[in-house]
Length: 420
Image (cartoon, rainbow, N blue to C red; front, side, top):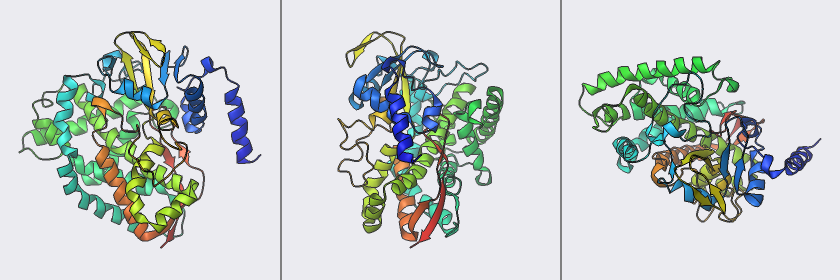
């Protein structure tokens, strides 16, 4: 059976499912990369969709661009509070033995605003200007050490390495132990089904280990003059210096995942997208100035965080549907980024789009990703340096994808480099 025939067969099976029985909360749909076919149906037939039964309970799916914007920018009606379930389709504190973490992304104003404001200077434009030479130096080092003409895993050798180096710099984390950050990032969003952790208890133990490691760094920096790294900033800011332990850990993990998973998967996703769209790869080779517009297009195309969730604080209407107070409302950014009524040829990867930043991957409103410019900076630098060295990063096998409804991750990507 050809790949096209397999895709047709899958599409026919999905088309036969009654619309009210569709459940997009199953991680296997994301791992198999068939989720787009389900979202396509929902956008066309029932863009505000209620799933009555799922392993995460009943929930609303918001699948079109403008409806997602309406929810994301209305924090007075749609809450991110951890005690109401938080910001992911799986309730934050629903798993037996889970740490009851708090983090500013899972808070509403005014506490959210105070804590976010405290750490934002680390990724302010002035600090990114200072970071750029360091990121470029490390990108060059990574790429110069790669084998030409031999197959290797791009995720491990490039995507993880660059983002972990950058994150270690932001935290001023001990350099030789920087891969701990990668591990803790993976563990934070992992369920036992992923194979990353053996059990929720094992996950809990690793996260406590993470917290104790960072507590050591905190205790060291709180007694030193303030510096520009994230630990020092939190240790000295009035809004964050007296955080309870679980709030401290929650905010740390938020910064680790935000600084690692999203950029890592966009770096891998960009290589895959260019290989799947050879015309676009030729455009890039002919005109490297297109990197500037390609970077946000990669982030739209990959959509590294597939969704954010809110809880309705009152009855509210969206898209002609009545949301009830207490309902779980899931904004599927991955679907909104394929909304052809808002984004021209949304189902195509086009590196010279006229308005490439018009996407939902960073969210909107008060919770818009604070590290969005850092993510774009890393992607721009790595592609500028790739272009100087390699005529092509050739994907040589099928990617392996993460078993997750939240992180749209690529765990392995076999490639071979062709020198320029």
